[in-house]
Amino acid sequence: MNDAFEKVNVFFDMFEEILQKQNLQVQEKISQEIRSIKESLPKEEEKILHKLEPILEEKIEKVKNEVGKLNNISTAIKREIRESQPEMIDALYPIIGKLVQKFIKTELEKLNENINKQIDNSFSWQAFRREFLSLFGIKQEEILLAQASQATIQEFFVIWQNSGILQAHYSQTDVVDDDMVAGMLTAIKSFVNDAFGNKADLEMLEYGNLKMFVYSAVRFYLVAVVSGVVDKSFEERLQSYMQLFYEKHLSQRSDEEIQQTDLNSLLKKHIEDFPHYNLIAQKINEYRKNVQQKSHFNWKFWRW
Amino acid sequence: MNTGKTYSKKVILIGNFGVGKTSLTKRFVYQKFSEEYLTTLGVKIDKKVVEIGEDIVNLMIWDIAGEVTQTRVNTSYYLGSNGILYVFDVTRPSTYEQMQADIEYVQKILPNVPILKIANKADLISPEQLKQLPVSYDFLCSAKTGENVENAFLALAEAMIGKKI
Ligand SMILES: Nc1nc2c(ncn2[C@@H]2O[C@H](COP(=O)(O)OP(=O)(O)OP(=O)(O)O)[C@@H](O)[C@H]2O)c(=O)[nH]1
Ligand SMILES: [Mg+2]
Image 1 (tube, each protein chain N blue to C red):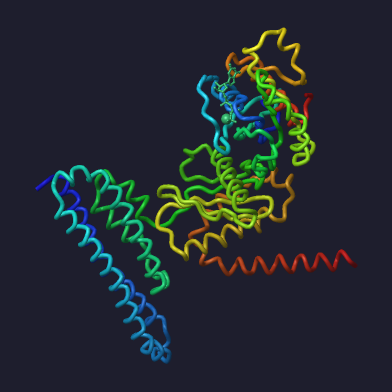
Image 2 (cartoon, rainbow over the protein chains, first blue to last red; image 1 turned 90 degrees about the vertical axis):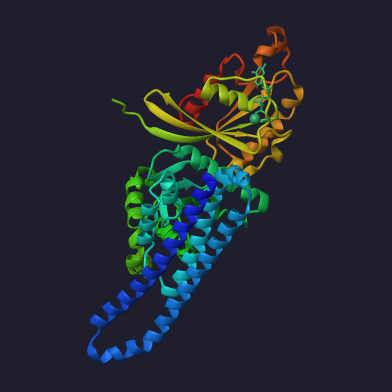
């Protein structure tokens, strides 16, 4: 058998194996949750849980189906490859590497979206990722880590809307020339505005394995560069989280105040808190209410 | 110890196509020149940090694709500019005949923004020909020899941070 073919084959075997394991993990995770709910419930409420059980069963079934589908696709690709000529495989091998990465990423995105709908984010992809990489401790590890992983904010920019001048920047790596990126993003944004009229605004850009999400306000726009698997729920959370930064740190400050504020530190803290966003969503609502009340109060005071 | 301020400023280069906007930027940022003409599509952005006395100015340079008249340029590229270099080619009258109208148009969009007129390709004409030039300019430059290129950018930087022009 051809060497390249073997590699591709091994890749898919592993992939299938991991899917199987993941499947088990999902079930385990769910039953664990049920157990812990049971333990924490007072006696009389256990009845409610009995009613819930069939619903959970159904959810588990659905998840299994999703994973099964993914398995089928993988088998089909494997068959295709097996049936093609060895010299074809040699020629294709470098391309296949890329295709496979892209394929896994898209499939994971789809799968993640579905599963999120089913079980409301109740298990994480961390375990999956760890499994995947430990099995795959070869040269593509880093690429796969970036691609098949949970969505993470790599970079975050606060940019003046018109001039494209960078006001604040957060970066995991600090390899990009942030001023230049800010300028180019602004140029692209301007181009979109000009070409499609002011009604159209740039919301998302995809570049290789990175996705850039844009939140536009009046004086500023914010850009989050995200790697990994991005699903709808992540996107929505991110959008409102970006808006939160704007409301908290930018909207109520004048241009001069902003230039004198250490926005970089505020930004860093804000982004590091992002994983706990679900937990603090409540606080945000409180904060927004507070601000409304404050301005209401100010208004009365001022009139008086 | 540096007691100055740090600024970030957006500079745009505008003017007819082929006048040397890209060449001037390349000379200023990379100290390079090429005879080859690759027309700019849309806009290209470069960056250079300069020192003006104690202050540091981070220049974000927007090299915009040339058009016969500025009214044809995507105006959102202009927005938020802090300084303008209007470039023309001393060997091609068509590149400066429109200059006055162009500058008025741009000043309407960007009031109170310093603008410098750059007469480029100085290496291609003799001093006699230069005297015949029917328009005024702030700097006579050559992207090819590098003459005055840095001076022009530095003067603009000074003007942008409110120093003498
Ligand atoms: N001799 C001479 N040639 C120059 C000078 N500056 C630019 N050129 C040449 O003029 C041509 C056009 O220069 P560019 O810098 O691309 O012109 P541009 O204004 O950016 O043109 P567009 O991007 O199309 O708007 C190139 O062939 C350059 O080599 C100069 O100072 N002297
Ligand atoms: Mg050009």
